[in-house]
Structures are given as structure tokens and as C-alpha cells.
Amino acid sequence: MHPVLFRFGPITIYTYGFLVAAGFLLGLALAIRQAKKEGIPHNKIVDLGFYILIAALVGSRLFFIFINTGYYIENPLDILKIWEGGLVFYGGVLLAVPTAIWYARKNFLGIWKTADIFAPSIAIGHAIGRLGCFFAGCCYGKTAETLPWGIIFTNPESLAPTNIPLHPTQLYESAGEFLIFFLLITLRRYKSFNGQLFMTYLILYSILRFIVEFFRGDVERGFIMYNLSVSQGVSILVLFAAIAGLYFLRKKEN
Picture (cartoon, helix red, strand yellow):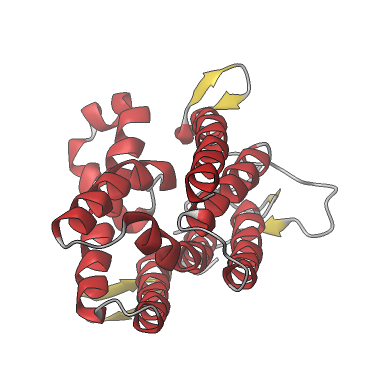
């Protein structure tokens, strides 16, 4: 669509990176606002947010490299080109979660209470980040020649195949994440135990991601077997783990 936001001499600002940064800042601002309401020092939330950002970027990139090892062995310098996409959300979660737990314990923050503060922020940040994927053309969908809302990428710098209609999978996931965000904001009013929002987010997102993967056309994300992608396999594990977590946290509270 529009992978480059603007160029100013030797400086190039990519739309993908700009929107990912915008999503992070908005999510962090919302987390700070909620932390103040719950009596948590906002400076600790800011610090935790940046720890999570670094861990998520490293984890998501490493996961993508792992499932595309062959390509990066032949093109090692491309490992650094994160502005071209190539970030797997689940990889970010796998590294960001233990990082957040470590920070919360070190600073005497309630782990599940803090997780609930960040849950809506993760959803809104990811929703905006997926719009960045749309503009960059990464995470593109399968061909959709008969689909009235099929998207045709024409920009030669796009990462998606050009001049053929594709499923706008980036918009599917972004819309789903916006919906999850509003559901979590609503659920927060009726929360009955700490960890409820975070586990609900994991359940809803794993279902969303599992469904969206059926319409994805980028083979770089890797497959476990047949048409089951790596992300779908992780979605299944996350779904059952989150359901179990929700059950045990509720039981512990009761």
C-alpha cells in the first residue's frame, strides 16, 4: 500500500515502524492512566513498558528467524531489517512475559494485577501495529479474485505480491484486536479477580489468530504439518494454557 511514510534526504521513515511505535506509545499511555487509578507508581509502568518493548521486539524477531533459518543463514545481514516486517507476535509474547514477571517481582508489583493493566494496551497496540503490516504489505493474505473486498497491492516496494487481489488479513486481525480491546475495557468494570483480563485476552487472541491464519498467504511464517501453521500450533497451546490459567486464578480467588 504505502510502505514508506516519507523520505527526507538520506532519512527514510517507514510506515510500519511509525505505526508500531504509535501503537506502543498509545498502549503505554493507557496503561499509565489505569495504573494511576489503581495506585501503582506510573514510573514503574513506564520502565516496565520499555522492558516489554525491547523483549517483544527481540523475541518476535528471533521467532521469525527461527522458522526461516535457511533464508537467514544465506542472508545474515537481513536479520537486522525489521523495518521490512518479519516480527512474529507469539515470539514477542514468549520473551516479554518472563521479562515482565522478572520486573514485577523485582519491584514488588502484583504480577496478575499488572498483567490486567497491560492487557487492553496489548490489544490496542497490536491493532495499530497490524495496520503497519497492511501498509508494508507483510503478513499478506491468500489470493481472493472473487472477493469484493480483496486488496490489490501496486507499490513496487510492498512486501506483498502485487497486482492481484488478496485477503486483507492484516485488517482482519487489526479489526479483531480493536474488538478485543473494547471487550476488555468493558470487562474491566466487572472484573472479579486479578489475571482475568490478561487470560481473557490470551483466549480471545489465540482464537482470532487461529482463524486469521487460514486466510494468510505468506509461507514464511512456517508450518508444522499439512496446512497447520506454526502460529496456529502456538494458538492452540496458548488457548488451553489460558483457559487453565483462568480456571485456577478464579478458583484461587474464591
